[in-house]
Image 1 (cartoon, one colour):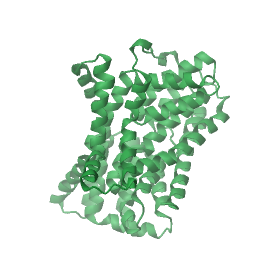
Image 2 (cartoon, rainbow, N blue to C red):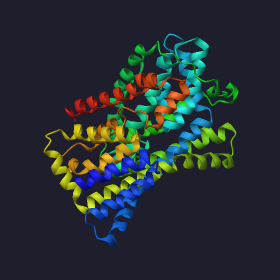
Image 3 (cartoon, rainbow, N blue to C red):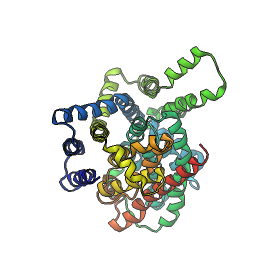
Length: 435
């Protein structure tokens, strides 16, 4: 336990104080942990390599295809069209709710950073057009993006946690959806009612040029393409309940329901509907896809590093000892997973690193305590969003784009993230009573 504590402290110091790249930090800490935990010197690197290979082997396809799909949704104007359709449908009175729905739909295929940068100009255009408080209008939409990032596959952290705990991607998505809706509503529009008086003059620099209406894809194509991975995952999740017994049909559905195949189908469809049909050639789309993979390359490396750390804990046998020691706290495993992730999140700042590190620490409990792995994914995902502050890039992104003081950023952004985290844990514990 002392060795693991020292390794986590070392990881925190390397990432937050020394500003070491998280992948290199994970790599150094994993090797140090392996040596200190008694793994033979000649087997430490093999353990690190195995951990990296195991986790990337399951996730590389999903995350890369998800990034390509998200990039295409962004550059094609589909995200802009989705937001416009929703805003026009509800009018000024319910414009905040329209932006929440738009953020949720767009947040499913888009990674958080891309979604934030893409949607903030839309928020500001609404703020300037209708003379509305920027934080009051914008924070609920940002809450939607944050919740999808922390709770729902195919985002990197929940996808990685599904692989680490051997959970079911479709089931986790359905459970995540059930928890996400109240979390977004309470931490978004409801909480924003208390933020109307926060002064905010969004910088003109961030008012992006919108694509002309005649260049945008249709509303149906935009919604259908962005939501296709969701539709396919939900279909495969509900298929077993249709009572179909034909073995061939079950095998075909199992193949089509594999998350990698789901994302591949979605990207192929999007390549036509948002690419070729909109006048783009494969050369242009190829450049977009390369840029998308560049955007998430560091995330992949961080995930690989976390896999190395987990494998070292497993190989040394210390993960079982940790699980046994944690039982002494008499804390429900789902709560314990949330607490560990929250502590690392507050210490390190990165939700992805927090979630993946916590997973390595509590992974043995899932088996030994017969915990529902899908709910553990969501519990740790919720904990990894707790109290974002000055060591989190998302904190500064929100502060600078909305031109806020540090104090007002804490009052709005940090509180919103904490509410999402706590409500998420509550949702997990309630679901655990019924599943």
